[in-house]
Image (tube, rainbow, N blue to C red; front, top):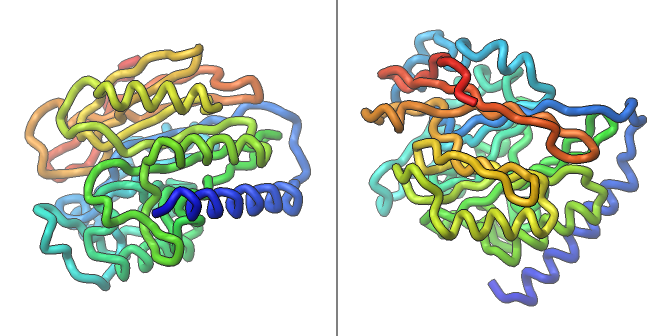
Length: 315
């Protein structure tokens, strides 16, 4: 895609965000804090899918954590569809049955589709996923019917705060990327990410949080690339950076007084046999006008079916 093309789309996105800000100014509650819950990879095919078909609830062990949060956000690591064809070029492809939607309803306000498995069954299944989530009242972000929609934030308006959550993937294949007139995910091109953060700020965001799908699988430490981009995003105006994809947790750090949680690891996912791959984090994040007030993680351990069980709080 040319720089001119993306610049034009960026201008359209900013105009759209500004229009949204003017048209939808809700009656503001007394300014306060908002409690956000982030979880890592949610893959609802295979073992988790069979458990749901048998009537089990993969999220039951974390009911009190979901109840704690004002807004719950996760990474949906599979299309939810009946259509499409598995891509022959991929070693592992996932597609969950639409029955899993009822387990996501009431648990998640929003799900990122910016990852390397959203396109496993092609554009047909991806678009079906977007439609099913919309019908269920769950916002999809980090992907959409075109490039503009894929780069649009998920907006949270609560307790006097406007919060923008952005989603990006930077793990192959890039063929899943959205285009000017075709569906797909938001690709993590540095200049595009930084423009989106600036656009969200210009549209009135009090808090901006990029939710990244990045890093190398099974690496316990973030790469130099992750560290560099995290700092660039905070310098551009992000209040925190949250990541996933490596299938293991990767630790955290503070930069300019703002938290970076590099990888939450897996949350619902089977097929892994090491302790590191079977352990994930739920991130409990409190934000207000002045930024991040505090955060902690809760550890989850996946059983043989890929369903998470509660562990002792680790931070």
